[in-house]
Length: 110
Length: 112
Image 1: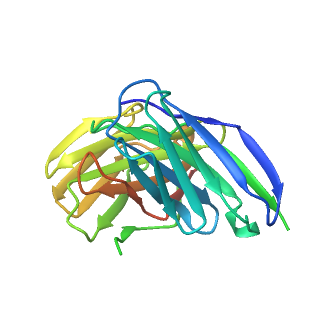
Image 2 (image 1 turned 45 degrees about the vertical axis):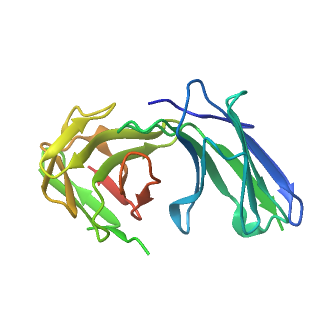
């Protein structure tokens, strides 16, 4: 099992702007998962991208994966105040154990 | 939708008490997890279970035990609660080791 490292640690933007968060990891993966945690809805899974995929979309979310660089990015377009949350990436190699990193704390100002 | 429920949202217990935290999932998931989350320390894995009656220690199992007698239910037991076990406890489940996790709403436990 391995931990993803999110960057930046914190991000503050205005409503309507785009937010980009990055993730780096160290070893080969089967897939990479992004999660969000806020006080209202707890910790929820957002999107899973497999190692043979380069890009995936879900609503206002766009995730990219570059396995050669062992990195991923999460783009939230047209941010809303409700997007204020911590975002975590979880690299998954199929092991039983999963590790959550410190995450990126996103603040979207209305 | 997958639903993971936890027995209590808030719990207050006294030092030395035996505490049971229950987690139930309704989607026939193989794997279940217990985490605790503390400010500045993030989410830390206490125990996980990959099948009924099977369990593995996570990163911080000391002071905790678990029970999984049925596939849908995973219990976390604090044998003798201590103040340093005051925390937010999160349960999660997933279909298998290659899939995403679904989390419960959490139990905020305070040990006085």
